[in-house]
Image 1 (tube, rainbow, N blue to C red):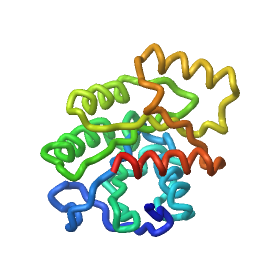
Image 2 (cartoon, rainbow, N blue to C red):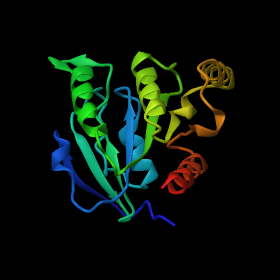
Image 3 (tube, rainbow, N blue to C red):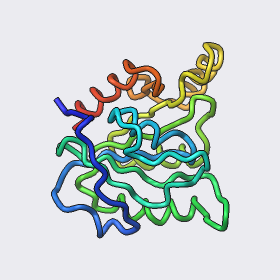
Image 4 (cartoon, one colour):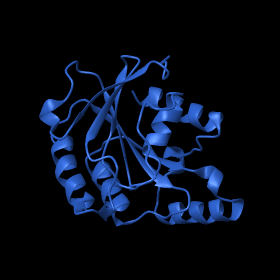
Length: 192
């Protein structure tokens, strides 16, 4: 069993050629800027400041590698869909991720995060389409579940069903609900 508490930040990089050595499997976290990637990493690892959280969208501009119990790297990708201060995050994300995916034999799972208060946007759909096309295992991780009521959750479920997302790959999470995080941890372990 993987001890997610045994986690450490390894390095940030702009070029996948600088990846950490040691051929550990990789779990990539992607999602729209401000979807809660850093908060989810901290909650999964039960650490307050492992990943830096910011109230400003678009803070992550690099690929951040975290070693989880010497079992795998959790790789936090830059967010997409938000541009401020002259930084085109969609372009940055596109270039960086294009290089990341090419011949990446270590990539074992993609976690696509979606804010429970939103629907899949074009960027999300492009990533879903890409991982499906390339046969890369993935989970759709719904974040901030504590921020929606039952009616809103029901509307989201309807949207996901219409988008033909299989129910068995959807994980509803809240950093306030340990059980939802434990379910995701078990699923990550199973995928590895």
